[in-house]
Image 1 (tube, rainbow, N blue to C red):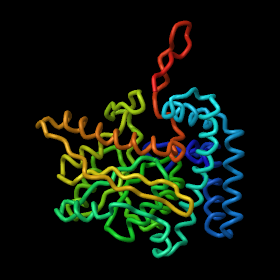
Image 2 (tube, rainbow, N blue to C red):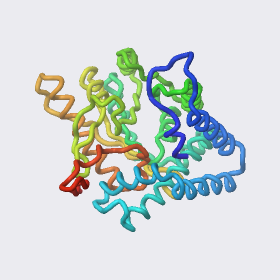
Image 3 (cartoon, one colour):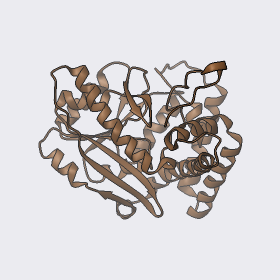
Image 4 (cartoon, rainbow, N blue to C red):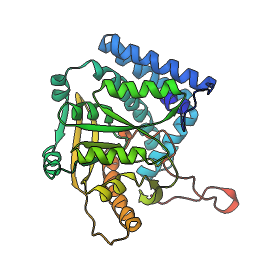
Length: 324
């Protein structure tokens, strides 16, 4: 399913936009896989998604190379090493499973979700919400965050954000998908309206969920992860510090018969009085939590976009070795 992500593009939406061939293909792929996952018997549907993953690993060279570079940094090995390539093959399979289960779980009742979703330390949500200022659950692209959203929506008032995508009908599909999972959604816009809305919902004691291991705007906070600097969005930390809502790092992992979700303790820093400094410090704490979670299960990290900028060329124009 990797070319779904490749076929859509974040950005402001226009009513008169014309779809590219890649966007039309992404639409067709998404809607076909959605129908298969939700209507076919489970075993043949899973086998089809697995077959797509194996074929994708072989023919989607750009996606394979991107994932190889990302996993190589996490594992500290060369991208073409046997270890990394074995991890990439598993990563493709787990990503296909993510897509199948994200669709299929929309047909599950809450009892089945509760049985399959093993959440540990959920009482940390209760403790955070007891203060009445809501809380922020920040997650990496790990395991299955859509299933986490469905579980959460069945037990708490929760809201997620949705980045705006091109073409518009793909954006509307993603929006409807998450609403069908039971989530309330706030569109992520270029102005401040999303942040204002989320602050209002925190005041109403919501759990705000933010998938926050990829900076979309290029204006994020420099954080070191796995020996190299990459940007993470400042939004979770800024929202927490502005509203007083606790920020918790949460991670989901794929298990044999479902998922494991770990809820972290609220992240805390010593405030300096300078918001930029404090946002940087809190975001770097979050990055450290994400790094630990990804290191625990690298192949469950569904990062099909470059996670780091390319290394600087070394002597002779070759990429310099990157410490891991």
